[in-house]
Length: 445
Image (tube, rainbow, N blue to C red; front, side):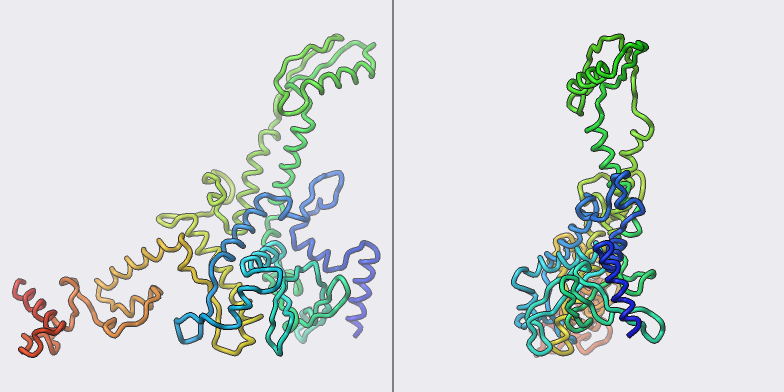
């Protein structure tokens, strides 16, 4: 009770003073707020990176959409057959009145990748089973905390920021948060480690805008030694200069100022030339945090900074799906099963059908070729099928060992029942024909 009162008083005090709760401050930190945030003299704000950084938006959007557009299927444990008619599939098709499944997945993953923490609220309950599920952002709730037996802080329940309504954790509302070694309550946003890169990315954009907006120069500056040169004359000369040369489209023009003004050539500083390279490096670090090769966003291979992508025969797109999209897809299915599928009893589970992804179909062909090579080495079809996950059903003939003599069953060459010349009653059987073929090959050898 004392801890609950203390938490309530602290939150109330923060909100009364600043208009924010503690969850708001924590959330702002999770979104990679930096030490300059809110500093008007700096002019660089990074509290909304999804809106302020092209590369944050592009990376998160690409991951979320790539997962959301893959069909999700329902399976029963112990069987490879796909369940085609089930209430879970109906809910997945329309999670709530406002969203279809791709929209739901996109919002959930976007909030998770941006904040490191998000929620799904179950509504319209029929017993323990929801008829609708909604994504709830971390900025819409704040925690009612407790201390467990080992001294860790945890959210006993989450309260709506709008009206203080309590939501029981693990029942009415389910949280998905990324591991954060610095907080027991809040997940760590992926962009947090790249806070400096994010700041540099936004700052270079602000700098470039100011450069073109305020750059009233034609690469020269005029001065005068005439002490009678008044401020009014200077203002008039400046206005005349700005009207002719201000802005990128009016640069590099010649002018005559008069009044004894002397021209001085002004070149670019080292910092001016360094900004484009700094922006490229910031882009590389931001995309590396999310595991997105920049070639998928229309860029050439980076020459500096952090770079990820395909190697050898694996393309960047395949690398992206295998190492980024598929893991996030598996995490989503585990979370979906916890929130929805598990309410229909044990044995059911969800997974994305990655066979529908064109980028991965070439990979399946490569696996099939490699599996064929293994069968030539003596592995059975059923063993190869299981080892490489080819997705075929086990076959009764799949335990035969095939040797390279035109792919005959080895049992026909190893003293099996049909290794000798078959009888007349068996001359028309498939095994008899295989046996004759085997004997002919032995005679030729």
